[in-house]
Image (cartoon, rainbow, N blue to C red; front, side, top):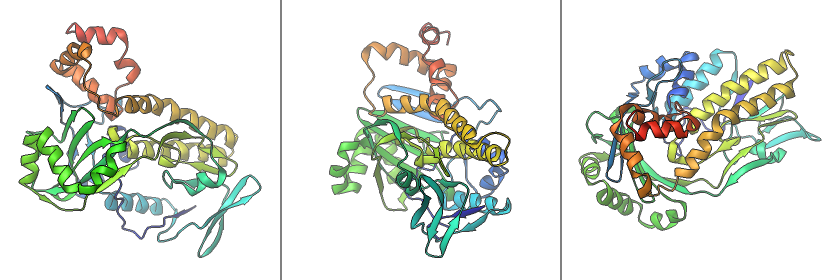
Length: 374
């Protein structure tokens, strides 16, 4: 098995807000890697502080079914190196600093890749190469549920800046704005803003000024705490070109991570989804290539399971992605959620993927929250 990456390791991924929700950290634990992440000094994330207009929600999302309570936000130059090292330990040949120049085809079937060093043949080529995947482009992978972008992001890193009280996640949302911060390596926090997608070019004209002005206006206490620290990196900006799902398999090829499904930044679910898809796809390929079931059948099941898990969060993320103000008719319900630790935990689970949107928004459940029983 061959793994290639165009970057020279250790390599950072700038366009990443790092946050791995509990289902993702559960997978790292299953793979024997969570202890390695912890050993690098990456702090756990459990307690949340979320302010939506006048309402404040504090607590922690539910654990996974297997009891994982903590999330983590490791820097990518650390996480990706750990993943590559684990792949090598498992018998994979890893080559970094290698660009894929061409996806090699035999008719409609992918049969390998071409790099500056030559051609490598494979029974299956997996594209885990992001939104602009060369594999997806070469095979013209069909797209569905395509939606226009709603959210842009600007973020950077601070040292010496504190999050509120004992929280490891601090989020403030107001009309068309989301402000966030959480801890990563070396005592730093990643801190940023979500603007509307169409505003990004205007905001880029004065990133530093607009960044701090937004914090000062909308979260003045958070602003003061940032100013007490030191900005340690440049501002990173981005906007999804589109939200989509792609068919993630075909003759000789498969897609994982953002290559196969990508959506708004506002719930920070990209790495969690990528880790889960890696496991589901590995299981499908193992079954198919080992002959325990037809490969196409196993890969079709991979797509079904991916969509079954992710589509509800895709829809939820897109619906709340513009940070609309709370509808006055819904304010009593949100007040009831904020007043209930159990309901607040379930609300946070919509972001951490430990609460089912269908279950949370079921009429009976909302009625129990509104009555003070939820």
